[in-house]
Length: 152
View (cartoon, one colour):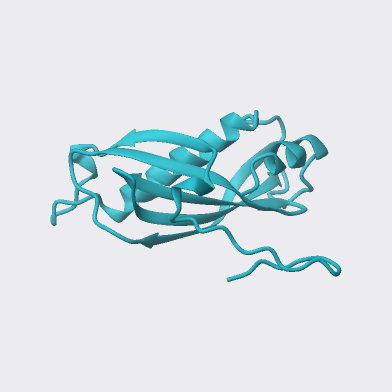
């Protein structure tokens, strides 16, 4: 898959989210017993929570506050591709970066790794909204710049 380009520039290949070399930001997690499903591996909901930790790690690295006066960030889309089972106990590494910065939203890409093996990948679209109107609002320039520092 290739990403779109503007003007006459050739398209830039989309990053391989399953390749650990794609990421500069890493967050560590661990599989908890409570994360397991009846089959004995990490439940799909738990994997979504691991990716949430990765997104928050990106926000921290970019200096973005989790709570901002008058605004909120909301998850508009979350896609997870499950590639391998994750068992208990295990140490997890979540690599995360920015795929796209838009006018009112940004898209993150992430990979979840156990012992260097990619077990899941994720793409998420986060939107900045006005708390009162609950409508999307433009990203401030400093937020766009901070997120752009972590483009994959």
